[in-house]
Amino acid sequence: MLMTSIFQERVKLESQNNKEEEQQFKNDDKFEEFEKCNFFVSFSVYFTWFVLTVFAYIREFLRYYGFEKNKSACERLEMRDFAPLFNSFEAIYARNCYMRVRDVFERPICGVPGGTVKLLDRETDDYFINTASYNYLGFAENKGPCATASANIINDQGISSCASIRELGQPLAQTELENLVAEFIGVESAICFGMGFATNSMNLTCLMDKDSLIISDQYNHASLILGSRISGATIKIFKHNNIKDLEK
Image 1 (cartoon, helix red, strand yellow):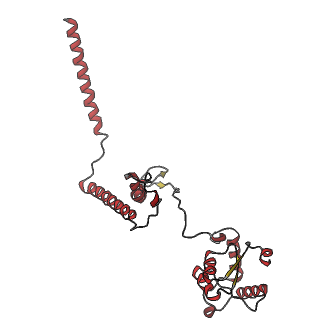
Image 2 (image 1 turned 90 degrees about the horizontal axis):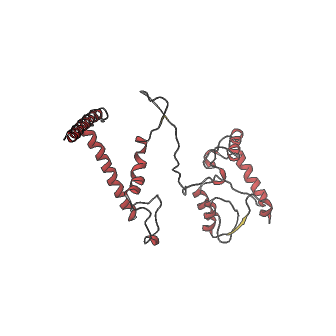
């Protein structure tokens, strides 16, 4: 009887201690709670994400049926029976939502987190394959032999007029170049003009025909290659910047 009474008293004491600890834990939680935002802020955030998600699915729908060009990786039509590349909300979110908003919350700082902070400079590894243009023979570089030669010739000869000779005349260097080209190929005269895709591809069709011969550098620009093919002329290719191969 005595043992039972002692056991009941002990259980009662432990239960009381647990209640006190639980109440203390609840009181501590009050200091850990985040401030509740008002209805307008909550509605704005949820509504914005809702609109962003809806447009993400709309864009996926348009891409699937070919109404919008798909600029990301996509599967070929003959591979549709295989496991799909993208079939989850995470993929849709990453392609259409995350990349648009990540700069809002991904802002690493460096230094002391005071009233004003210094943001950490960073680079992204989101590289793309460029199929719209290219660095033709290094001409797009801001350093190297092409850039150095361009800077030297500008200091010596000035900049080009970037226009027809009927407007501002012709630079002396271009006249010398045309005379040198004519002398090299053994003809009366030659013409040299600034390179542009339409300039090369369209003018060659006016100057050449099926009875003409085009001797082309193997690394000539795509515009020259296209114009040469369209003209119907016979094309002979020599090694890049190789005078001996050209003379053959």
